[in-house]
Amino acid sequence: MPAVSVVFVGPAGSGKSSLVATYTSWATRKLLLRVAPVNLDPGVEELKYKPVFDLRELFTLKDIMRMYGLGPNGAFIKASELLAERSREILSKPPFSELDKWDLVLVDTPGQMEAFLFRPSSNVFLSNLRRASNTVVAYVIDASAVAKITDAVFLWFLYVLIQIKTGLLIVPVVNKSDIALNPQIIQTLIEDPPRLMEEVDGEGIASEIIPELIEIAEKTRGPLRTVMVSALREDDMEKLHTLLHEAFCVCGDLT
Ligand SMILES: Nc1nc2c(ncn2[C@@H]2O[C@H](COP(=O)(O)OP(=O)(O)OP(=O)(O)O)[C@@H](O)[C@H]2O)c(=O)[nH]1
Ligand SMILES: [Mg+2]
Image (cartoon, helix red, strand yellow):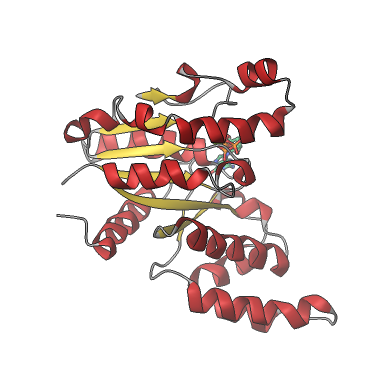
């Protein structure tokens, strides 16, 4: 199997870094795969995995804040530009320079998605990565952040927008199954997103707009089902692995 890269994106605190750590450890131990975790978050202080490449070797958020006189959000935007500018240099370093040595490259990204994903510069790194290896994106949803139907619709729609923005195949992953706030809504989200429409109640803008949003989301969503895991408990890593495997088959990239 050629090395494949999985880029973990998702809202702040959804568990991207934890998932990279847990999935790395699980796939290494259970499947004997050669897994290279990569950190692209310049602001993280501590990691639960040992990255093969760490963006902080080139710059940290604190460096950028100091050097350019920026606050944390401005510094994340600057970091995203620097990541784009230096993407070729980064991709010439391990693990990207030695992809034949690895089965899986798991890329951890910052939670500031508006800086990392929604800026024009973000696509530069992702397109270069895509040229270097087979790439899919895992979009991580925090099950403990879904209390109401509007939370589910918001996070689901974000998934659609990320798919449009990156042009990459997205694997939706619901994390923190152990502390899901509203398991029923999460279940509907996973099994049958259009049914969320039936659960919209009340009047006003939400009840008018949500069915339309869900309809658009359904038309534009990728071909993959959603998987629910717990990075904390290492639950359902096998399901995540199978789904990623399917994603590579859909891309036609898996041998
Ligand atoms: N209960 C529970 N907590 C989790 C799980 N995964 C992550 N967490 C916790 O959620 C918090 C955030 O986890 P991170 O892995 O740092 O999340 P992140 O998406 O990388 O965060 P940012 O990079 O800051 O956006 C930490 O306190 C984790 O221990 C899970 O499956 N279950
Ligand atoms: Mg993180």
